[in-house]
Image 1 (cartoon, rainbow, N blue to C red):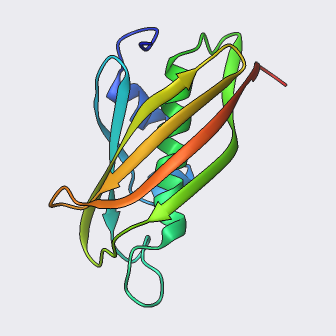
Image 2: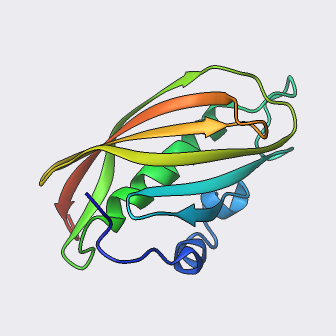
Length: 141
C-alpha cells in the first residue's frame, strides 16, 4: 500500500488552517510512501488542569494523522475516509515539549481502513498508541 501521489506537507498544513488542527498547534512534518507524521506542542492548548498532556488532545492528533493518511490513499474527488472508531492507550505522561505522532496502515481496503498511530515524547518514548478505523464512502455522503 502506498499513497496515491507524493505527499505535500504544505498542502496538508494549508488544509488545517482555521480548524481544530491549527488551534492545537498540530503541524504535519514528514511523510513517506505509506506513513505520515505530525507534531503537537504540550502547552496551555493541549494540557489538562493537572498540567499533563490531555488524553483528548492525543486522540485529536491520532485522528488527524490517521484520517489524513487514509485520504491520501484515495481519489478524494470520488471518495473520502471518515472515522468510525478510535481507541487510545495512554502510556506515559508528558508535561512539556512536543509530541510526535506517526500513522501507519494496518489495513487499506475498498470500504474500510485501519491505521495505527504511535505518539512519542521528545525522547522517542511511547506516550499513546491508537488504532483508528475509517469508513471509505462516496464523496458528498
